[in-house]
Image 1 (tube, protein in one colour):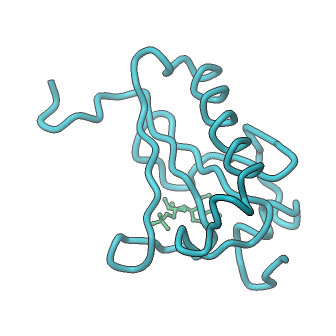
Image 2: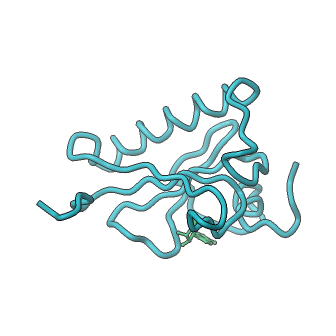
Length: 117
Ligand code: AMP
């Protein structure tokens, strides 16, 4: 169900116009507003799921399959599959979650190891 005050619901429904880099039946992806790497994309379910805690692996299995194949495909399209990329989910405030609509950060295009090397 769409949440009226959720910015990611508005992006998923097209109410906020955004260039989508991936469009699936149950999820979409777009560029992060404040990129932390040359490739920084956000994969979100079309359905409003607030945090990882509300995701049901069995009930949402089709969504999960599409999210992961979408991330693999998009990483490939962006030429970062072989080099390497990182997928991050922040769950709740102490992990730094700012937008309460589940999202997967896909980061790549630079060295993500620490110390860099
Ligand atoms: P998190 O801290 O895991 O909740 O990440 C939220 C991310 O959403 C941040 O990296 C923001 O830069 C990004 N963000 C917030 N609003 C938008 C928006 N309208 N379009 C694209 N990215 C956004």
